[in-house]
Length: 71
Image 1: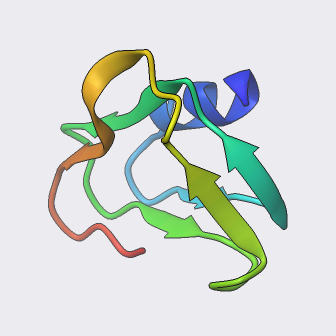
Image 2: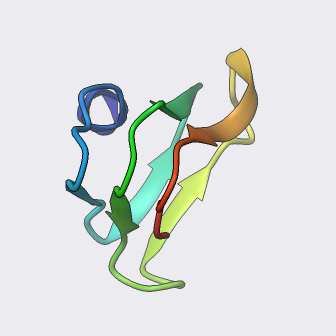
C-alpha cells in the first residue's frame, strides 16, 4: 500500500503506474498533482480493486490534477 502511494507521489511525465491484481484497502488518498501524460493501469475492473472505505486522511480517494491522464 505504501509503495502504491509512493508511485503516485513520485510519478514523472509520460510514466505508467501499474497496479497489480489485488484488493487494496487504502487508509490515505492517492495524489497525482501537476504531472501530465500519466497512465494508471490496473489488471482489470474486477481484478484490481482500490477500497477507500477506511480512509483516515485526505478528502478524496484519488486526487488527480494534470493533463492527459489515462485511467
